[in-house]
Image (cartoon, rainbow, N blue to C red; front, top):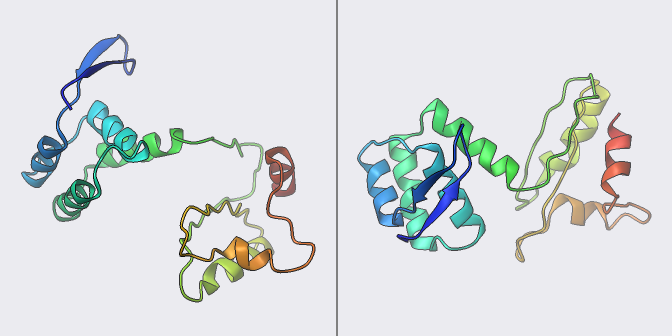
Length: 162
């Protein structure tokens, strides 16, 4: 984990030396604060499956016990957001909320909350991932209804929200 890459954040281009995962775990364990490059590296390592599960667990535990600053949290949230496709819902003037569910036993909330939110005039786009083999998602439950479509093209999905 000692190779480097060019970082383009901020005003100039600079080199970022990749720290070891152990260093990052120890830094947070000892109460340190991650900088933007370290958070970007952590997110990329998780998404690229380069951060081993046992070290990810240790990092999560360190964050749990030591917390994250507002800046760390904002940077982490932005990096996670930018790791996928970002849908611009700016033209929707109604209040917008989001809920993510991993499924689980029952998972009644994900089936009830969107219609209730819509009845109250709140836009609640439901985007659901099916990454887990052992979880039956709300979408999979809804797909058992004849005629229900969960695979809308992005443009049609956004049009239904407006």
